[in-house]
Length: 205
Image 1 (cartoon, one colour):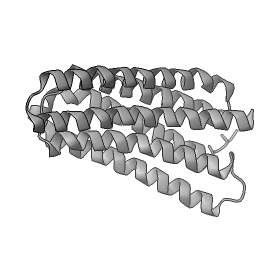
Image 2 (cartoon, rainbow, N blue to C red; image 1 turned 60 degrees about the vertical axis):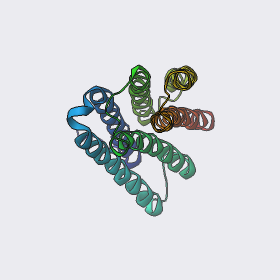
Image 3 (cartoon, rainbow, N blue to C red; image 1 turned 90 degrees about the horizontal axis):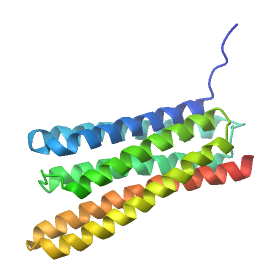
Image 4 (cartoon, rainbow, N blue to C red; image 1 turned 30 degrees about the horizontal axis):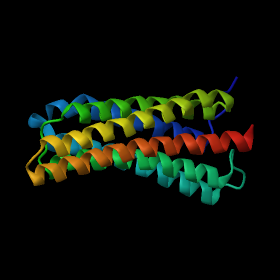
């Protein structure tokens, strides 16, 4: 019996989610050893970002030539864009370590990295359930993504307060503040994926 070919849209979204997990894992595993490999670190993250760009282009190309799609066209495009924003945020954060010559990840950067790593896995689980049309089961992961984003908000509040209390060098303060905010914004982008999935659930269940 021949297996039914997976829908190109779901397959590409799954590939994208898998790449986000790989990127978030790499990010979390390597930010504590930047003194040895910051340029390589930024380069690898750029490759992950470029890979997700190629998946985005695939989906846009398929939307332009496919008459019947498994979800509303706008939903597919908005979900793709929100996932691409996550990888863009990870890559932009990684590039800051290289551009600003920030080679020591403090406890807050490590906390952000772990929040983003966990968020990536929640996105991956949700997208694989979407491919299986198990819409209501996705809610478990969207709730978790919202919780993780709240954790990111709390880390930003704590680390910003400490930054202004302890760091006297204005250049160092500017660099750290910008990086903290960029990391927190990336947790917001993960929540955007959750919100997009919630919209899809409401329209299709």
